[in-house]
Image (cartoon, rainbow, N blue to C red):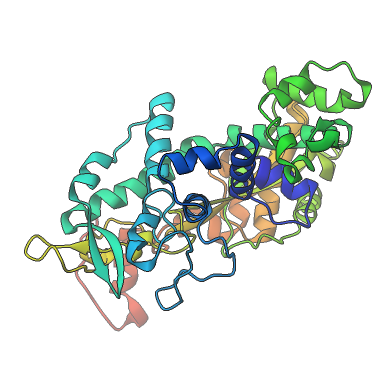
Length: 419
């Protein structure tokens, strides 16, 4: 939330991620605690091993370096003959790494979700093979199904927890509170210099003080300058959340630079003809959120970047394509969900907002909301592509397909059996 939502809105001109801060934090901790002599006493070679540690966190320190097979070796901490070491902590090649296994185990346990991926089994079959001059971590060919299960588990965690509609709106509300509080929060950094919430990322001494306590600090404050932020956080604590009025999908991916403010105005202005005339909805009361879900490599299949070996020849690395595994695997590996939330919670305004949302989906040619027939029955039949008879994978049911096939141009006849 902090780097993906708050910093992006508070400082739109910079590209910053928490991995960036991790590198600066590591340098700060080593320097502030005088760790270099201690590291050398324990056998670390400096500065190579310090570089290697940072490359484990964020990949090549040269952000312009390419990770393609044809590009020059981009790492400085280890030579190319140790390339497999970069596939353990943060695997940039296919995303199979111990970082994922760690949060799978932790989050599945605390959420009560079954973790179907057995990392012990993966480790049992893991071995290093040479592929195009580089040494890569490979696994047995029979484990390919388990790896698809691993990415499916990741997708389930995002759907059921990380990108759940309630989690999503709570993060949005916290972001709103932090943005309102940002100019009025002062954090002391190096040399006694003071920083706001959004500027603290530029000073590691100040950044170390940005813990979850910031939430309680605002919530329990008495400052009039933090009144708006405080009220938003109180609403979260008391479960007075913005309401999700619906979820839909676009026909093609939405770019990050999409003007979301325009969308919020469009939803507010998408008034159905049958809507109550005395209810006026304002754009600032809507929140439009675009959720990206994928297998970790956007639209690409990460298993295409995994290499396998067979029992008969464990030294030879091979690719296994999706059509060699199962026909039940996903056709695509990324999708976007578009969610619309409404800030007011009175029943009359909320009902109107839901109907505005359905009308907006029709105007934008988005998919029909799951509850569209219930919340706006007078609207949903008006769009032909939303009719239940025309939806589905083929656009017609088996009986209709049989009849149409039997009577094409009146030329062909076929005996059909309708069930």
